[in-house]
Image (tube, rainbow, N blue to C red; front, side, top):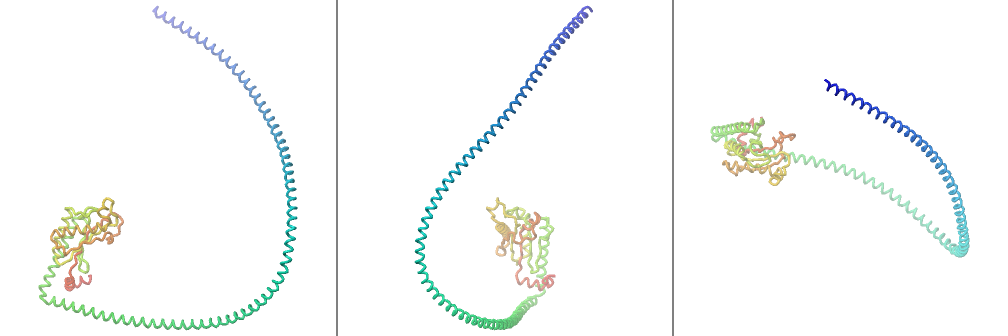
Amino acid sequence: MAQRGWVTTALMILLVLIAGAGAYFYWSLNDELSQMTSAYEETLAEARQGQQALVDLQAEQERLRQQLLRAQERLEQRTTSADQLEAELNDTRRNLTGARQQIIDLERRIETLKKDLAVAETLASDRGEQLARSQEQVAELTARRQDLEASLATAREEQTRARTQADELEDALETARAELDQTRGQVEQRKAALDEVAAERQSVAEQYRQAREQLALQQVRSQNASETIAELEARLQREQSAMNDLQARLQALSNEKQTLVSRLEDGTTVIKLPEKIVFDSGSARIGESGRQTLQLLANALESFPDHTISVQGHSDSRPISRRLQFRYPTNWELSASRAASAVRVLRDTGIAAERMQAVGYADTRPLVEETNDASRRMNRRIEVLLYPDELQVKVDSALNPESADGT
């Protein structure tokens, strides 16, 4: 306990000492701050006095500058007046010199005019003679003018007569043109009559040719008619069955809803092969799936032994990409190459080469207007056209008159 009381006493003494020291420093700082404030106020007062003195000096400087400017203006005015007087004196001197020179020039001109007057008097006498001669020429020209006026009157009378004759000739020309038009109309009528006669003759010749063909057809029908009709009907049945089977197989391969196999009114069979089931895009190479498609086509063609086979390549309107232009510069080369590739594959299946032809049409015969990828895809295709021979067409028409009429 005694030790704790001693520590407390020591702390209290220490606190008293610290408080005393703080009070001493505070009063010392406060005194110094008061001194500094007084010194600042004195300095501020001196600065204000100096500023007022500076303002007074600037005002005095401005007054002196104004006096100097006025003195300079008076000096310039006097200098300008002196210069003007000197310039006027110089102008007067120059004018005087010029006047003297003008007097000398006038005296020279008077002498020259005197000489010219003497020459003019001489010329006047000569001009009098020329005037007399001119009057004689005027009289002659007046007489010639009168003669020319008389000739002009005569020419005008002749012009009037010529105009009258021209009007008469124009009337005659109009009459001749009317007669010519009438004659041309008669010639056209006769030509039309001749054309009608020629048409009638051609019609008679056509009827005669058709009669001979009908006679030939009747002879075909009369020779073993029952066997021929049965054979033709069986062939037509085989062709139709082959077309239906090929249509189903092609639609299964391409997933197309459009008709891929059709027959035209003239007996031509058209088979459309979309690009994707035969070729790669932008290429004429036929892969394994394309060969299988063409094998299906070759199997169907066995039912058309007497038909000519035209393989036709078609493309869309987009240009060939740069990557393939070295091989196919344009769509013409691409479409023709595709048709040729298909013909080679069909030949390898056993179809006679002399029955086939390869044709490229590029983008000149589109199926639909190209507005998007789907329409362009429809135009990229191979078409195989089967042309029957002429006699077969006529026999088919005779056996199927409704089909020949397009119904």
